[in-house]
Amino acid sequence: MRIRNPLTTWPLQHALVACMVVGAIPTLASAQVKVQIGGIRELPLEAKGANRPEAPAEPVERIEDPAQLARVFEGLITDIASNDFAARQRASEKLSANEQFDLAMLEGAMARPGLSLEARTRLFAIARQRFFRSPRAALGFQFGGMQLRDRVVVGLTYPPFDCVKVLEEGDMIVGADGFKLEGPGARSVLQSVIISHEPGEILKLVVRRGQQKLNLDVKLGRFSDLPQVGGAAALMEDRLSRAWRIRTQAKGVGGAEPIRVEGARAAPWGLSEEAANRKIQRAMERESNENSPKIAGGGTPRLVTNPDESRQFEPAVRQQFVVINGQPRMVNMPWVRNGFFADIDPDDGRQPLDPTYERGMLLDARMAYDKRLNGVDPKTLLPTDPLMAEVKARDLLNKQMDAIQAEIDENKAAAKDSGKHSAADANAPTVP
Image 1 (tube, helix red, strand yellow):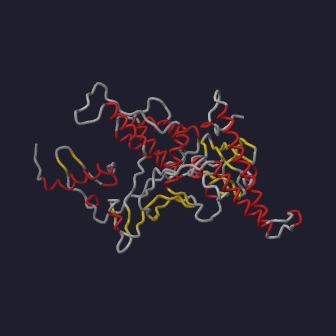
Image 2 (cartoon, helix red, strand yellow; image 1 turned 120 degrees about the horizontal axis):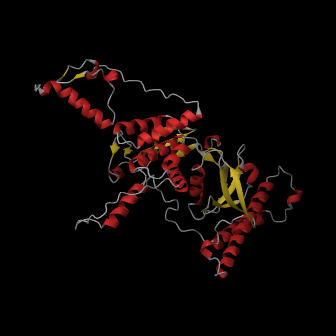
Image 3 (cartoon, helix red, strand yellow; image 1 turned 180 degrees about the horizontal axis):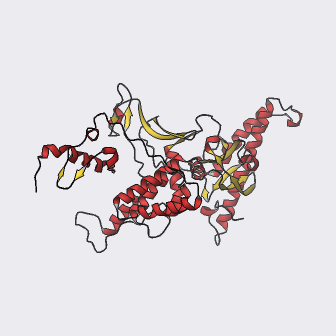
């Protein structure tokens, strides 16, 4: 066997190492590498990187036949669980590049039993990317009832959304898809539940309309069709991440079986086997949405990898993935000290207000309207009279007070009926 001078083979060795790092080896045609058994020929100039243009991205061929699309998808799902790493990598790239393999197809594949941990992880990452970049849903209304911090009150509704025909101004939404909407994070939870849906799907709501409690089905529209008011058409990463967690829980595709090593004894300095498995499970359940480096303002921007170090710079911003009018992009968002984007607690550590206290707040506001409208008969006012806005605002307050009073009465009745219910589950959505 002939031993070659290592200096002459150094470029190819390092080229192969670099290709392995990025996870793909260039084809022989693009790199023009010629290999023969017993030795390595000198690389052409193009393979050494001298003014070599990047290879254009391979176009995705659209598959018009639904049956053929299903066959190709099944083949890629088989390949993604293959023993051949190159086959798994190619399948991942093709599934990610072709948007014809929609979110429903990917979620269906993830729910199949017997899928390997790596295959499920690859599909999960592709599905999450598809979710972030695909059109998201919107209900189509503006929050009202600003006096009530912990409530979701319907304000204006926007055509052509279906909610215009179903919801009324002053309605109090207390449940959505089985989630109770209560406490300081009620609005954030509702937003996440809505965004977790596809446009055109049905959202099941529980609504208090005065003293009535209604179960309503509302067809969702597209988030990009919301009015361009106050950046409403921008979907932030924290909202998308929370919505993705809600969707994966609802679809039953968010979890994966942890790797368990049977019969292994824990090291004296380590965790117990059960504790270690719980730690692995928690790590698997968390999304890879960690707090990214920040760019410190003032002078030349640079990356700050230590969050404590960023306190020395004011102002500071953070790069965040945002979908604006359906177009994904990276933007610089103001960095909030002692805060982070990712798994944000919607309640922000605050306790929900007592319903009796909330009703008292509304009563004070209504008394202020009564004082201004003292002696005014609404029937005698013209529609253009400025006092009509005061009358409407007072009527909406009465509607919200009736809704909260009905909830208080329902809680009291449930607390007395100890054989069937408790006060804790009194607000559970009713079954029609």
